[in-house]
Every structure is written in structure tokens, then in C-alpha cells.
Amino acid sequence: MTAQEIAATAKGNVDVLTVALGERAYDIVIGDRLLSSAGWRLRPLLPQPRTITVSDANVAAHHLAALEASLRDAAIKNASIVLPAGEATKSFAQFESLVDQLIDAGVDRQTTLIALGGGVIGDIVGFAASVILRGVPFIQIPTTLLAQVDSSVGGKTGINTSRGKNLVGTFHQPLMVLVDVATLDTLPRREVLAGYAETVKYALIEDAEFFDWLNIHGAAVRDGGRTERRYAIHEACQGKARIVGEDERESGSGRRVLLNLGHTFAHMLEAQSGFGSRLLHGEAVAIGIVLAFELSARLGYCVPADVAAVRHHLSARGLPVDLSGLVDDGWTEDALMAHMRRDKKASGGRLTFVLVGGIGQAFATWDVPEAALRTLLKDALAAGRGGAG
Image 1 (cartoon, helix red, strand yellow):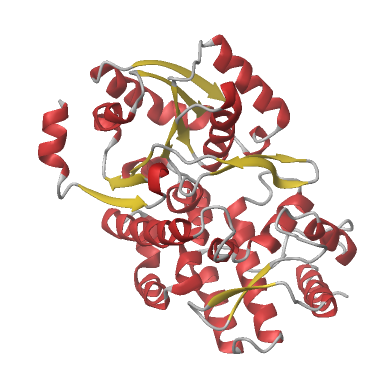
Image 2 (image 1 turned 180 degrees about the vertical axis):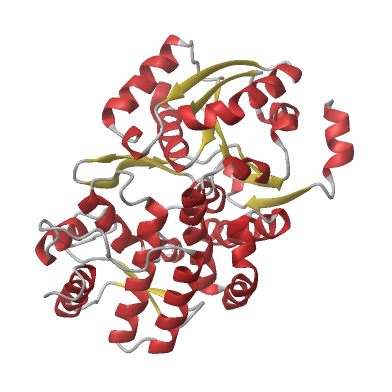
């Protein structure tokens, strides 16, 4: 496919959203089976027709060959690097390995990195792009629902440490986010559900109408409906693009902090469970959202019916909504509180919470009483143990 053919057929075949960040503005391009035309879509953005694609072993088996063929068709010279799959890849050890491989591949300041994969690949590749040679361009091609609706947009990059999630990272905006909805067809159901939690998050932040739509069509999003998935991705990306455009680095208006609905709790749960396959990020977000709504109700900000509605919605889609199956002897209030205090959004000894006045009415606060938080965690742990105190 030539550049002219791409231009002639693009209208109607893709949805294009813009993240409005001045000279760092970029497009989110959403469509079906876009990998085959990726090379021609990306080439006008490249400082030179040379890329290094980084993927993981799972994604590479399904999608790397198609992307490589597309880049060849557009006369783009490409080298590929494949990392291990899983959250453990977001580590200092794997980051060092990636940097070494990029250098061995001959990366220079005009080389564009392509992140082909889920949130783990997007985060570590974006981080590498932001620091190697003091910064090179990169492009996001997210292949999981979670990455397509959330982590690929907004420029947050990073890796984990043993002390917590995403504690080392940068802001580094991509040149483009290219979302091929067809890549979700190869995604395991559990990974789709993890992405669904981040999708519904955008409805709960400030779009009650989207939540109503998800109540009707959410099962189709989960089960492979192409039209429903594309619409849900568009709505979530539109919400994130709007917020990031107003507050790129969680400063200024402070609006970007709203994107962390459920995440203070989620990062705590991930750290306690060891950042492994036992609890996926999206699963932790689902539980975290329920805890955020429950805390909001206990503090009088929303009504219990809102908590019940969100809990039912997530549970009906197949997501976890409590700590069942997670809690062991190491799970204590003090352990969970320690993880929360190490959260990167803590400031001046105060924890940042995103709470709600109702569905679609999120707000940030730094004034949650510790006693209320400890009681919430105590009750959550008891429920996770099957009611035993």
C-alpha cells in the first residue's frame, strides 16, 4: 500500500484523536487491521526511515512478522528485539539488557523505537527512549486492551522496583499511538478483562453516559465485538486525551491525578502480591476501584447504591472485586499501609486518593482520615479471609 493509497482510504477507516500538547501533540489512530499499513502510516513521522521494534515473546509470536513486513513495504529499515513476557520485565535488570541490545543494534538519535505490545513493553520501551542518548523518538503500537485504552496514551514511562510499581520513570510523549483493534483477537480472556477495568475507569471518572453504555454493551467488549471494542477504545482514549491535554504531568490544574482512580489501592495490592501473574494490573485496578467507591461511601461522598452498581458491573464482567484468594499471613493492615506510603503520588507525607461523589464524579483529595482507611483495609482483609477477623 502506497502513501497515496493510505491517504485516499484513511477517511472512514480509522478514528483519529489528537492529544493536544503543543509541539509535542500527537495522534491516536484507531482502526481495524492497521498493522498491514503501519509502515506507511508511520513513515512521515520518522526523522529517518530507521526503526527498532521492541516486543515480548508472546506478542512477537502473533504480530511481529506482520509489522516487520509493513515496515519493509514502506522502505523502513528495522531491527527487532524480543523481551520476556510479563510484569517482571519492568525491572532494572531487563532495562539494562534492553539498553545494551539497543546500543548493539546501532541506535542513534534519529532512530525511532517502536513499542509493540502491552503496558509492560510500552512502559519500558518509552523509558528507554526517554533516556538512551538523552532521548530518542518512539511510537506506541499497543496490543492489549489495557494498553490501548490507557497506558499507551499520555507519555508516562517507567519500571518497577522491589519497593513499588512505576517508582522509576519519566514523561516522554510518543510520536503516535497506533491502535489495531484486531490485535485483541489473540488476547487471552483474562488480559481482556484486565483491560476492561481500565476502560470502565474512564466512565467512572467523568462520563456516566459511557457507564450506561457499558452496562448494555460491556459484555460484547469483553467477548470480541469489533464495533463495541472500537467504540469503547475511542471513548476511553478521548477521555484520557482530554485530561492529558489539560494537565500533562499531574500539575497545573491537577486534573491528571483523576486518572488514578483505584490506582493507589491497586499499586498497594500489586506490591503486596509480588507483581506477578497472581494479580494482573487491571485486576488490581478493579478491586481498587471498588475500594475507592467504598471509601467514598463511608466518608459520605457517594451513596451505597453507587458502590453496589460498580461492584455488580465489574463482577458481572468477570473481574475480581475483593481480596478473595489473595490474602495470606503476610497481608496485614500495616503491610498494606507501608506500600501505600511508598506510592509515588504521596506528597508531604499525605496520600493522594481519587474518590467519587457518584458515578462519573471523581475528585482528588489529600485529606482521608487514616482511621477510616485502616478500617476499610481491615474489613477488606477480613472479607478476603472469608469473614475471619
